[in-house]
Image (cartoon, rainbow over all chains, first blue to last red):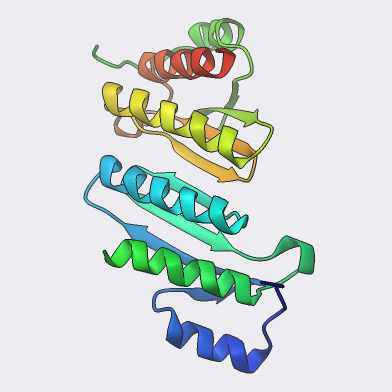
Length: 96
Length: 96
């Protein structure tokens, strides 16, 4: 999949298509909350495998039961279809 | 192990005892760099297990091959012997 920068209209659709994610300064971001650290890190492990599969990696942080994930496509300097796909996959993992 | 806040003298010793860590606004912090995301996340997985074992959890972030770990003892509002112990264990994992 060749990534391309999403235009305004596509970004408006994105926040509807992938619930929980918001657009913040040329990246998309979502906070995930869990019962404890074990649950949070188990989620991170699943996300890590998906990221490696897509060869697309997040800027993410964790404190105890909270995980914040930020996605953009550094090479293209913005939010792309690849970020949208990865965010959608991450939501699927969270919703399982 | 009952955690206690480290005093100035102990903090000065800490940065010598656990190389790479620096004191920043009531927490200790170190940046770890790896060859790629797989190596970085493998390290994070080992660190996660140690953190859960000590029931002491970091504020940490990752971007691709870089991991930044920040430790403090929130309940006591500063850097404790528990942070020092965990930082020392994390260094051992990194040095393996």
